[in-house]
Amino acid sequence: MTITPELQARIDSYIKDNKIMVFMKGNKLMPQCGFSNNVVQILNTLGVPYETTDVLADEEIRQGIKEYSEWPTIPQVYINGEFVGGSDVMIEMYNTGELQQIVEVALAS
Image (tube, rainbow, N blue to C red; front, top):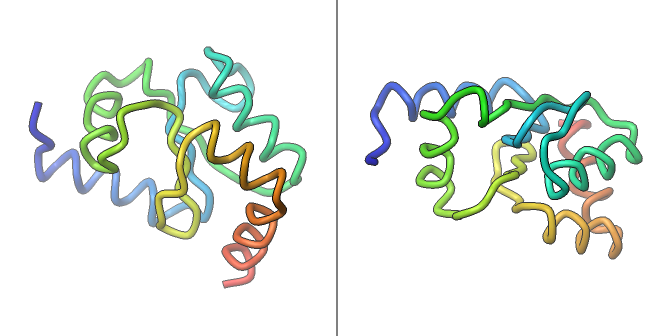
């Protein structure tokens, strides 16, 4: 599947309209996989506002986001318009304190 201009624009708007955007399986109230749940737990622990898009409910986004970011797995986290990574990267960054710094900068801008 090649990402269409329409899909590219949809993904762009999700990322631009939300300081912290998570493309995941399920949503923040009901994550549908362990990796998505890890990301939700980290963001909830930080107590920051964020939005989620359920890729299970939208096959176009599910496939398109992988091409968009050139990252093969879900969840995918974007902070301040930048692709940060998935579950493992978020855990690593949280444990080093780097994630907290990035989030503070994003929310202050």
